[in-house]
Length: 183
Image (tube, rainbow, N blue to C red; front, side, top):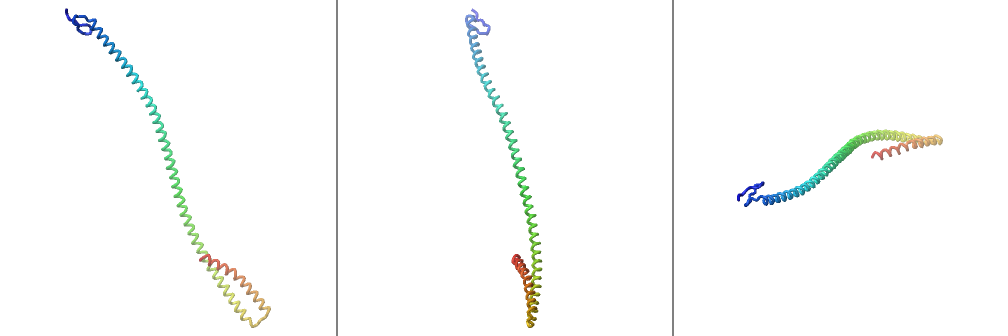
């Protein structure tokens, strides 16, 4: 009995290749079925993971768009805040400059008013001195004429004195008011 080789190259003792081929075929078929099942399972896993990857890619695109939109809104808001702050700063500077200008004008007006009131006070004092001088002269004249005692003349002079006193009174009041306001 010669030992021979079957189609797959499996040697048997008695040269019978049918049993060896069938075991081999069974193992190959089992292996093939097992690998097909594994392939099917792995394909399903791969399809599942590919679906998840696709889902995550779409979600990532959405999130990137949202992030970009948020960034644009943030930039727009920051730009608005910067412009608003700059406008307020410019307004503060403008108001500060205006206040300095107004203050300078007020100081100049104050100096002019002090000068004007000083001149007016001097004028009123001068007028008051003139009136007092006239009043003194009139009183002296009245005293000088006292010995004559003409009733009509005395009456006329008394009227003149009263008139002068009436003229003098507003000037004294004005002088007193200006002096009090100045000091």
